[in-house]
Length: 400
Image 1 (cartoon, one colour):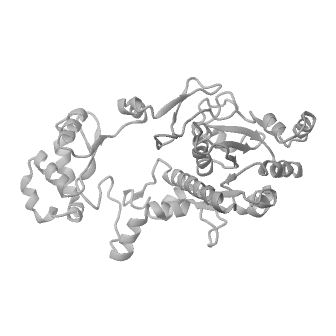
Image 2 (cartoon, rainbow, N blue to C red; image 1 turned 180 degrees about the horizontal axis):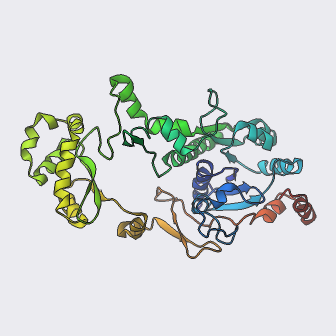
Image 3 (cartoon, rainbow, N blue to C red; image 1 turned 90 degrees about the vertical axis):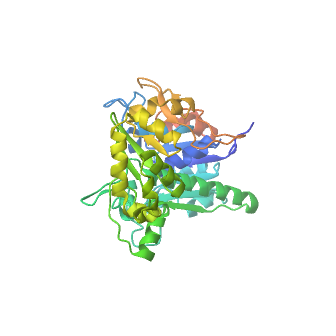
C-alpha cells in the first residue's frame, strides 16, 4: 500500500523545530525528505546532546535533532557559494516542496526565495516559517517560541502575578510546524487541480495568537484584565493541581454535570445551591475555595487512591508525572507511541514519538532514523547527474 505522499520530494532547509518538524510530518506520510545543512553540521544538530562533548555521528547529536529529522536523507551543502547555488537549482528542479524557516534575505542569498525557486521549478511549493510573518514592522526580527508565548499574553497569564512563566514545552514551535504541514498538504491538493505552486507562510506569532485567541476575545469584549493564578483555572472549578500523600494530581471540573459529581464525592452537595458556584464563571471566580476543598480531600489519599475515586466518579483527573514517570506509564507503553530508534553513538535506542495522529488505512510511520551528517550527500548528487569527479571537486572546494 502506497503512503499518502509517496512520490513527493521535500527539501528541508529548516532549523530547530518549526521547519524541521513540518518536514518530518510530511516524511512520516511518505514524502522523500532531504535535509540540507552546513558542512560542519547545523547548530540544531547538537541541541541537548545525548553524549556531551561527542561529535557528529558519535552520539553528540541532540535529542531535538533525533526527533525532528527522522525519515530524512542528509545532504551537506554550502548554498552561499556559486557552485552551491547551482546544486540547489538542480535539486529544486526535482522537488515538489521546499521548507525553510529562514529570514527573507537569507532565502534570497541562498537562492531559495520563491522567485528563484520558480525559475527552476515553476510549480514548486515554498513553505516558509518566520517569527512574526511578513508585512508588519517586526517582519525582519528574529524570534523563538518563548518570544511568541510572551507577546500574546500566554506567559503573562501563566505562573503567578510576580513572575510570568513560559511553557517548558515549545507549543508555539510545534503548533507552527503542524499548521505549516497542514498548509503544505492543502497547497499540494490545490496544485493537483491547478498545476500551480504557491507560498505557504506560517509564523510563530500567528500560531500563538491562534492558540491563545479566545483569551484575547474575552479581554477585548469584557475588559477582564485577568492576572496569573498559578494552576487554577479562572473559567471553571475546581480545576487545579493539588498534592496527594505521595505526589500531585490535576483535577479539572468544567460544566454543571461534572460539578454535581464532584460535590457529591466531596460531600458538599449543599454547594450545588450556593450562588458562589452557580455556573462555570462563578466557580472560576471562587475557585480558590474549591481548590482548597479538593486539596484537603487529596491530602488524605495516595495518588493512586485519589485517581481511582475520581475515575469512579467520572471526573477528569491525571497524575503530574516526571519525565521518567511518563516514560514508564503503562498506557503510553501499551499504545506504542514512543518508537525505539537506534542511532550511532547513542547508549541506547531513542524513544521517538510516532506521528501524533493515526490514519486507519494509510498511517504515517517512522521508517528511518535521523541522518548522519552528510550521510546521503554522494548518493543524492549522483542521482542528480553529477559524476564522481565533480563530487570530489565539490568536496575539495568546501561546497559539500
